[in-house]
Length: 237
Image 1: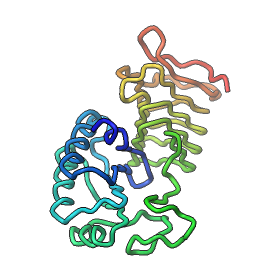
Image 2: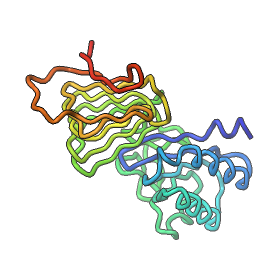
Image 3: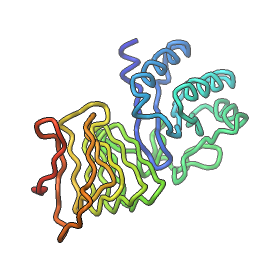
């Protein structure tokens, strides 16, 4: 059981979350493992849309409905199932679930178009490697990013946008929205930006907001927990 549990992966992508589960073991065991994983991280993940990658696991329509219910119990929306088995993709479509990610190298049925892609791999430009998520865009009002790992944004984070990460958050631009680093309790996490003027900053369970007074010329800054509170200091790049 423990070995299989370690194979459950939750990553941030453009469309929300990519949850990858092992394609071996019983479905009953999978439900138990997934329920425990989601319960542990509910506060971090809730409200997100989920694409579920199941590889070659064989699932019936009833199994997918059980998975839908499990995600709903944790305030998550299952919107896509990425599967290698045609029968699983067909069952997903019967439930009005997508079977591919936008921008992936698959046809509309979820079949890979490129022979260079290894079986079981869902292709998306934002599936991170080594726990990091890199976004080359400006996050506008209403946009939310949730990622279990570090997040690097090459662009601005506008007011009304939100970034939540279990690791560090680096913004190569202006940070004017809400950012929560160390969201799973990591007090060593930091938030860095070329211009640090957030609506709100959170690191682990500490919260800080920007002062009301106008600031002079923007300088790169880093926010970190020092002596039990969030402080901003010059970012030594």
